[in-house]
Length: 245
Image (cartoon, rainbow, N blue to C red; front, side, top):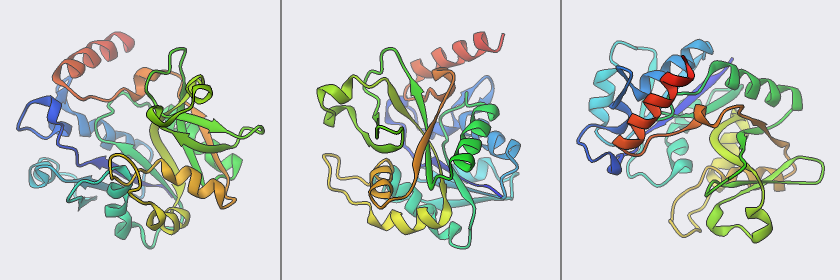
């Protein structure tokens, strides 16, 4: 049985709006609705939504979904910190936990099914959804061992020249076995430029401890495109409409 954690606490400053980012609409539906519908299509046994900015407004909007478990992330100290906020709702969970973003509306069920299958078949503790991009830009690079195991995710600003040449990058979606997640979350630190808890640091922590960490590639980068401004929202709406015909 699958648990899902959805990261939906961000203020979305660049949206330049009082409306929480995940309540902005794409094709008439709030962004968060797409992620919730995806979780439902996967028949998730538990869905934990991490909220922060205008949390009551988000909770009220989805009051017709009584199965959701809302948790507050306050203050907001990074993606790792967001999952820490969800951890109390996962204490008794023994199976895999899928970590999704509330502002990524294009993700397809088939892509997540492939991610979950890779996680199970490879016997991984943690599996990252990645992308193979001709121009990988400023995404975090997937640094692997010679046999293809994921060793760490290196953020662009910290990457060496050889690491920046890597085309396989992090798409920001993860599946991790609950007991391993709960064991390693407390080991995250804020020893970085942003003074935040990075979820990506789990990769190196787990791999260094000898746990299996792998990745699965997303077939289309459009699926994992996030939204940071109204302009990006409008552009993504047009791109998704075109892709869906």
